[in-house]
Amino acid sequence: MKLAGTDLQKLQSSLLATLLMVAVGAASVHFALNSTKAAKLEQAAAQKNRNDFDSKLKQVRSEEAEIKQKSAVFNTLRARGIIGEEQRLEWVELLKDIRDRRRLLDLQYEIAPQRPLDASPGNAFAFYASTMKVQLKLLHEEDLTRLLDDLRRQASALIQVKSCAVSRLPRGGADDASNAHLQADCQIDWVTLHEVAGK
Image (cartoon, rainbow, N blue to C red; front, side, top):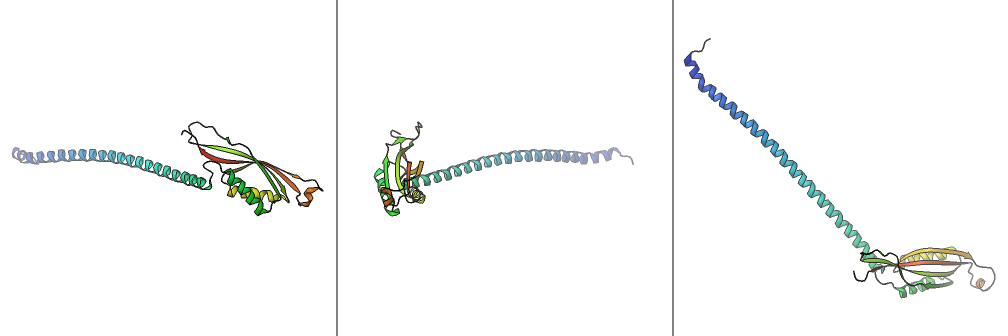
């Protein structure tokens, strides 16, 4: 089949329309690919921003939980009297109360002057300790452990036992009348937390 000149003129408009459609189709594909690429970049940027915000939010929540926890510990220590000036009169009353309640035979003590435990510059609070020498006559070792447990639970200070030596009392003599068999010599630190002056 041969095409005549008139047939070419008739096909010319169809060919132009076809070429125009192919060009429009190619432009649409190109535009769609560019739009998809731009959308993926925007999505990646939005996801990164979201991840950054999530990370910052988690950090803030973690810091908030840590502050609440430290605040609760601080309030507990303050309620127990551990934070602030040492309460020596209360300590003496507590020792007398424990001696009477536990029916301890003989309890003698001596409190040394207070000394700083740490000297870290820049801190608003610092730990201080007062060493107490305790001499105690015992029927048995459990009297000593009960005394130390009572002090740890009730004292308005942190109690740290530095040393405790238990020795047997000699038989015969005045101590036999009191039924004491042992003597304990202990050194106990009463630790308090003070606000540093000038901070």
